[in-house]
Length: 133
Image (cartoon, rainbow, N blue to C red; front, side, top):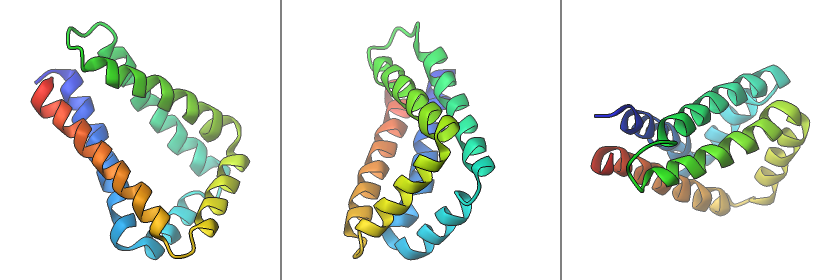
């Protein structure tokens, strides 16, 4: 296994672990997310961890011979940029966005739908790590 496959499997597994409880237990998961995003320092520390993963994905997939590495490269640029903007610079806007999104979806179907999409994307990343790289 190459280091690109290991980082891709890790990121896919992390997405699945973080988003799968939202499908089954949305109310309890929202309470946990609210505790995690209660202070600016917690948001910034999670942002720094996400930026480190994005930079590792960019670095490992930049000169890869696999055409599927372009997906990881694109994901790394997008995730790194969005995390820097909302997780490091504008933490109050990020918190307002999360609260607004949770309040909009009263019956939790929208949250479950987006979480199912994220879990499918995580499964796709795990497949890329295991099957392609």
